[in-house]
Length: 181
Image (cartoon, rainbow, N blue to C red):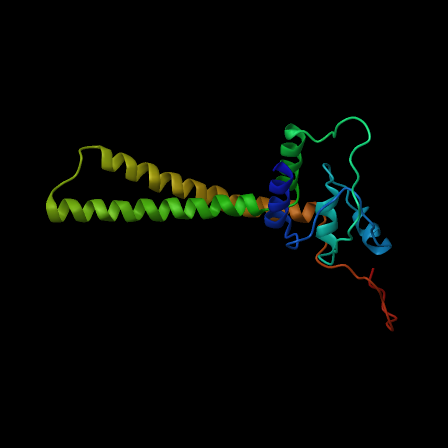
């Protein structure tokens, strides 16, 4: 189940093509390898690096035999660490999720505040203190999450820039005498 979760998370955080199985066994073209080894950051995650360089991947069916001896090294703790590494080192999706949640909370808070004010003006019914407390928490919490998300966008963009995530990869130069480097 944890492998399935990591596979789903890779689709969300790394834009992994659906149906592509990420395995520890890989055959990588030389031009892709040359781009991957340029990574100088810490916490290298090979699948994330490959997907940063190219979306053109495929799966080749191989026969997996049962382990001859011993057990696998990936336990729940290691899979959670792998997931966190994937989510925090190769994606700004968590920052965008914080912005989205903040926006939803703020909208919900403002909507609820409007509903309570209309209820008070129309029917004169409002629980004492509770409404203002909930509205304050929802609005302020939403605005704070939205602000953190916006700051996170800036930090995420700086991270992607520092991480040297390529905007494009030149696979081949043909017929031009101008240097691309």
